[in-house]
Image 1 (cartoon, one colour):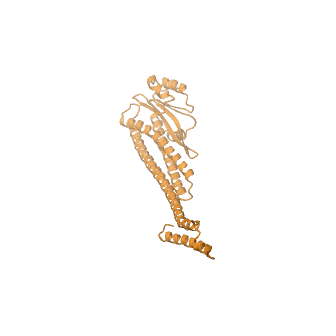
Image 2 (cartoon, rainbow, N blue to C red):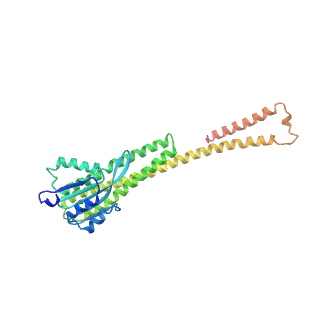
Image 3 (cartoon, helix red, strand yellow):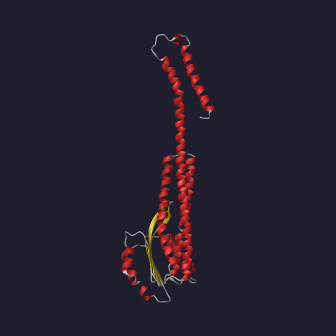
Length: 299
């Protein structure tokens, strides 16, 4: 297929099974040298890009939502002036979106690999938004949880999990910024000026996404601080109650200790109503302290 391409047609080949051997053969047919394809095909390489006048190679980690959690998956893209190859392990919502758009607009504008390449970048950048909104909504729910029915272990574990999700987003986005920055700042032969202009718009959009993720990280830090503040307040309240109880018990213990001594001459012990007076004194002392604490708004 690749050998039969002419100036009037191009090919988009998508591999839904990342087989480096098959991908390597396709890259060889496109005439891409081995010194560029070897690091591109390296299974231990999680990020790579090479932009030359004749071809583009890129390898990114895509983030996608799956049952409320973020999953990372590899996407490899190779493009020349007559072909574009994408490789992703399994189904990809990003690829499906590009296919749908191509079917609608291919006849009018989809006449080059650069168009597919632009649509792919557009889908990838737009894909960050629902993930950011999802994490933001979750953080608001966690704030409501720890301000209401407080379950410290559950809420804390969920917040820390969202912190890991934000880190995934940042680690996925940063390499894309580097690659797009190089694309829009360097004139590459296989990209027209119009395509570079479109990519510049996507790069600016990606920068806004980066700022949104930074804001999300700030919101996450504020949520963690609010959680610890709530927890500290609860601990302080518990300590205050314990301190009040201990303060009330101290005079009561003193009274009990005095009348629990073994001196033979304690007049109140011989009094008929001494026991009741003893209990009344302890009760009056406890009530008086409670009233004092309440008046000072310690309770």
